[in-house]
Every structure is written in structure tokens, then in C-alpha cells.
Image (cartoon, rainbow, N blue to C red):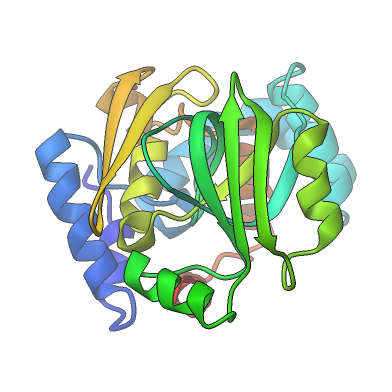
Length: 263
């Protein structure tokens, strides 16, 4: 069964270039070109069928309240599901970075930075050149965070106007997830996140000019695991189940919404 979600981005003029990059790199790395099960028809149906036995009773009791359903469904799927502090803005690699994907099925994916420097931004950028111009014109904050062993060890804070101070301060309170937005490679990063085992992967990221190079060191999943939805988090599975049952999944609207946020 061939995934179709990445192809959906090809049909939108604002995301076509990002999708072309993702397709090319997916072929080179021989990974499944899937961005999100929200945009998969047949694969999603199979996933819902497999989740039915675990979640049908939870849905029966909490079908009218999405938050309560998610809370109880996540526990049903994985009692040990992790809760993390989240940085609600964006992170781009400044140099060589080691990271772990912790949430997929979305754009951009969420990561924990294990080692290295990332630039924190208020909005996403399609190129480093565009980012540098925004920083130099004071249209963007000037924040660079250095991590070691998954924790912030240094924050170079030259200008902090747009990003909330409480979000920046929260970075020093322990492990935190960040929205990983590696410029024009963001769709590919979402594809790559679908092809690893969440929390159990190590990915090395380096930059060469405008290129961002990602290499999976460990935790790569099999194609069958990806297609069956086994690399999804408990939260994603629960959300997909609820939204599918409530008929809340509208492919074109999802693409248009993502496109408006990506660029």
C-alpha cells in the first residue's frame, strides 16, 4: 500500500518545493515517504481498525469530550507515555547537532536536542539567508542555545523581543521538546521522524551552507512498522482515532493550514 501524504503537499504551490526535497531525500535514504496519517486514507483505516479493540470502550465513555478521551486513551495505549515541557517556537541547527525525535505525525516534528547548538526563532524560515537577514534587520530574535546531554548549558541572548521570556526561561528547567524546523528540509524532517522509533533514536544533523544533512545513527524503524503506524506516539494514535470517529479529518483543509504556517 503506497503512502500518499507527501504527494498531497506536491499539489499545493506553496509547499511543492518542500515536498520535492522530501521525496528526493526519502528515495536516497530508502525510507517510507509519509508525513502524517491524517493525510493517509487506507493506512489510516487499517490503523483505526487495529486500535478499535483497545479504544472502543474509552470512546464510548468520552466521545463528547476530546481532551478527556485523549487523557484516558493515552493511558490505555501506553501507561508510561512521557509528558514533556514544550518550547512553542522553532529551532534550527546552527552547526552539528545530535537530536532525538520524540513526536511525529506533524509538521514540524518535535525533538529533544541532545548535543549541539540551535538557533531559536519566533517564526519559521525557508533558508538561512532569509533568517540572517531577519536577525540583522531586528525582525527576528537573536537567540542561540547550546545543549549537552539533553540539557541547556548556555544561552547566547543578544536580543529577545518576540519570543516570550517564560518560554526561554523554561529551557533551563530540564529536558524540553522543540519544534524542529530545518528550513526547506522541514517536510523531510517530518518524514524522517515517521521512520524512527520515538525516544529510541539518535539522529546527527549538520549544515553545509543552505543544506541540512540528517543521518540516523540508531533507532531506524522497518518500513512495515512505519506503514502499520507502529512508530506513532500514544498521543497521535489516540488523536487519530478520535478525529476519525468524529469525522473531523479534512485533508485539503489540513494541507492549506500547514502551508500557511510553513512559509
